[in-house]
Length: 483
Image (tube, rainbow, N blue to C red; front, side, top):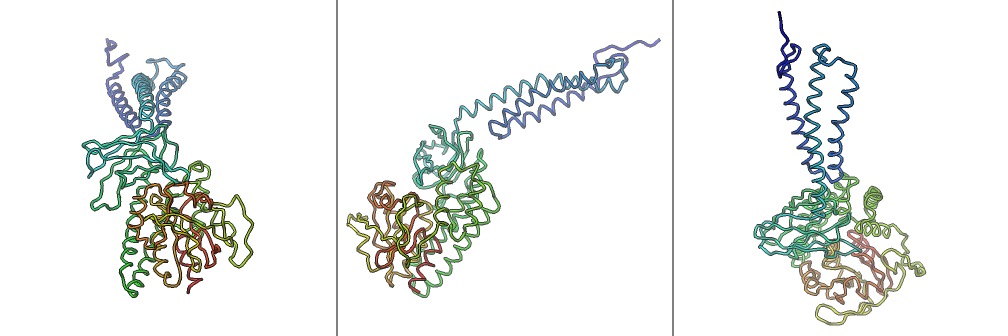
């Protein structure tokens, strides 16, 4: 007579040993998946969601099982049903305890980790001495303001915790006052930046950024664009010592580099629609020539990034470029207080500027009457301004013998940086002025300048011909006057 086997691995003559092994395998796999998900670089909200989901799944599973088998006879049911029932119950039993614990622990841990970091920005800088300064600056009202700073240790590591926490927008790490790394981040992220300082003070390229996808995308763009910008500056600098024939060859090379730079920026905009990083690409583009690109980028970010100062600056520039212009042979327009970036437009008489040059000598804009003058508002810390300088230098070299002059007004507050930028960018004209007041520069306030670079072309009688000239439009306007 057969007897029933009711050992730990069998009941009612049904061998459940394979089922237990399967249950253990299921649990190990589930634990592994949960571990990967909870440790993945999701943001805070994703981690909370994952934690809550893992807490809810076991309860939902137990409810479904009970409803499915509430009328079944347990182990008196057919063997297949009993196996399924036992497997599901075992899985739920193991997972309920393990996953709820993991979900709560890592869910809360993730939240607390972000709160503890407070949007901290950390990283490692190779090729630099211990104690090197790393300053965090935020873009606001057309300028960069210091938020916090740190120093590297003997391993090149640094960490900065902004106070107050960063708002979503463009920010910059500046290493030893020389090498910038631009970030697009806020207090919900904790970017980790790994860079290597280049030899011979070259551009900082190939920055590796983790924990901020938008910053990583921006770094890739700059790694592609900055070598082109470097080539542009090198050719422009060499032109100062070239013969007229060689300058013609160099000028063609410059135009090819500018074209490549524009094409790269346009491709980046097209391939990354809806990303805030595309705003940086607009800096290399003339808003009049590439109004479609400006419009596309600004519209794609109008709901998600419109509160950032960087977005507002570029939108202002675009709006100014598309506003109606008054031709020089028409009557001067009535003064308006709501003009974009400047209270003076085409047809107005240029207001005189009296200010000191780098040597302390007083220079006047009115002393240049009888010449065509490009009035240029810029600053050494302004990236777009520095990228425009090769175009201005090229125009000056080409037309200075025909009565063309440049009058540069700097919005710097540091004399050394101003003078070094003049020398480095090869700004060889004599009319450079600055009152070291930054954005409170007397001339820029008188003209109503709210963002730079900003230029005005003034005729021989001191009447403004055109404003907001950038890139190819500078030479195009001068060709009309001189060629």
